[in-house]
Figure (cartoon, rainbow, N blue to C red):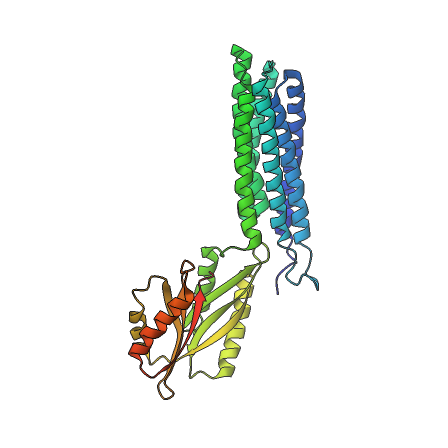
Length: 369
């Protein structure tokens, strides 16, 4: 059902993460030596922040490796979502470190400590900023190309780290040239950046885990692919479940002419299912609405009757049987509508006035994609 053979994406992610581990461990080691020599709590915080980045990369590797594991009886959709869990762990670590840095920096403000820097240390801090910007850009580029939420998280953190290092460098320069000691204040500013990044990253990864509306680009592409099929008159109610990056399983309802024979419809939709999976790696199940295309005036009459109801987004799957005096259609309703039962009653009342004596069957839909 889903393609688990191509490990190229994961290999790229792991290679990038390993590079991040090497760079961050190197930067952290030198910064710790500088911090011990200069008595700077801000640089200690910055060094530990580099170590947290290395840890984040380890989690990224673990998540990517586990996401490659093939489906089994208990996990038929695979392990793709473990990547999101890895991203959440990284985000929580970032937040915890930010809070600890903030506490340490406030203590230094309350009890100021003199710092002293050598010129070589200042040049290394400048070099570290340059390296951080480069690695952040690399993380961002690879994260976007591979759609890796973990790499995007680490990349965003790396950009924040570069800003933090700039603030710490300014603090060190003031100490070196003017004997102005603002090490504690620099640490507070740095920790606020870390805390902010942690909160944002937690929200993004948590949203992925609990499930969010699929990206508009994805839903538009699938709708367009389905509508290009010659037997499809309309496509609605697309639902996609995400089981990892580019691993979607879902369903869609399509309108077909009531006069088409079932074997033809079944064969063509089976072919379409394979076409969409081969091209987009999306596994779709089709629901079928039979529609009578000669009753457009009746459908327009109902559309006009509901035109002023703002929470009604569209109607579809319309079918009217004049002999049996039955009408059925689906109504897509905005999530902001608080009273579904009241809305249904209002719709039925308006339709009944225009089609007196008809049995009315309405399905209330939500717009999931």
